[in-house]
Image (cartoon, rainbow, N blue to C red; front, top):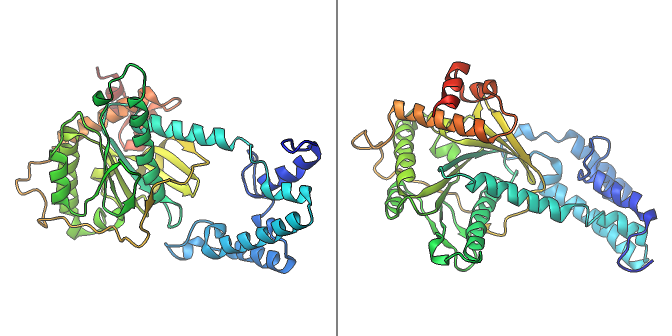
Length: 377
């Protein structure tokens, strides 16, 4: 057998590796990743720990045992022992069972994931408002940076298209309320207070591409705190209206729970549930802690090349303490209803398979309201 070809006899072991890891497109419930650990006693211990693991016992626990620090260590040490045995004893079948199927659509699926994400983020002309939630350890912050990275790459590619004047393509500007590391040439700043964010927005025009990621929204945008309620309603209302006018193309807020952000904001945002480190589900809205109006799912999400400081607490200051001083800086109730109806119409036109009853459930309105929205010229 030549060095670049996999023997047919090796495929069962390689496919078993993919199955155990949960990467085959089949129902996966019969085997545990513990099977990859060589030592019998450690494998038994790992299987027991996986079986009794309960992420609901604390909000900071990852959704899966194998995503915990200890689970990753057990798996790494166990597989390393098998790899050493395969290398030292020249056991190619054992090596194949460790590496799995490196070409098993990994590159293609990653490309499809990136393309799908790009279409969703910047496929239209309207401002993207995204509420991203999930349990601790699901990779929410990393995924928010993947979004920014995808946006940046899209506009960089657009500048290289033949016949396009690069100066006619906007250069995206990014801001976060936590520290991140971006490649050279990326316009990024850290903004930790509402006054600075408002000032940054008004520096531009509607032709620009500005994206802001607001982490720890569970604390600062919560609908459960009466002391925050007025600030949330007035300040975020004002921010969205100002952002649409001055070039805020994307606003991403990150929370732990799908019910911890005020209804005002949830009404205007797409909801993304980060279901695991490499998976996410996308919805038109969220109600009673569940996504409503399913749009699509992504799997095989790659880790962002942009890094962030895990010790950064993503601080935030509302600046002047209360809401808009004039009380007139944001949308009226009638304007918010109009924005909601515009979203309903766009979703109905663009999302394959979504029905009017689906949208009625997603936005908690009557089917008659949805019917009027989708037929409005």
